[in-house]
Image 1 (spheres, helix red, strand yellow):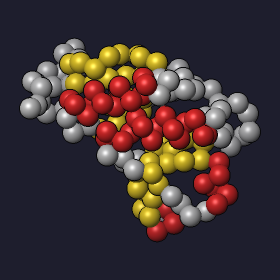
Image 2 (cartoon, rainbow, N blue to C red; image 1 turned 90 degrees about the vertical axis):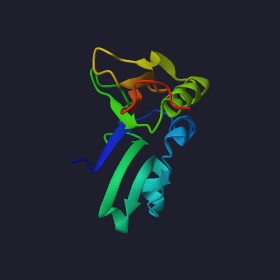
Image 3 (cartoon, rainbow, N blue to C red; image 1 turned 45 degrees about the vertical axis):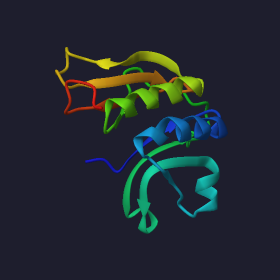
Length: 140
C-alpha cells in the first residue's frame, strides 16, 4: 500500500541519532541510496533497493521547499513491533534520545484487547508509535 513516508526535520544529524536508536529495537535498519546528494539531505530506514524501484521506507530530511520543518496536526506513523518488549525498548530509546512521551507503553483496550503501543514525539515534534498486536499478555 505504501512506498514511503517522509517527515521533515530541522536537524538531520540529530534526527538520524534519534531514529537509529528508537528504530533499532524494531529491527529497522538504515537505507542507503548511494546518491550522495540525497543521502546528504535525508536518511531512511527500511527497504530501498534497485534505485528505489523496490522501496518500503521511513525517511526524515530537510523539507523540499527549504522552509523550516513543522509537524502535521493529526499526523502519525506507527511502526510494527514483534513483542511488547520491542515496544518498551522503542519507547525507552526514544525518550533517552530526547523524545517526548505522548503515551507510555501499554495495552490500549479501547482499540482492541491485543493493541499494545507506545507513542512519542520526535525532536521535531512528529508523532511516532510502536505497536504490537497478537498478544493479550506479556511474552516471556
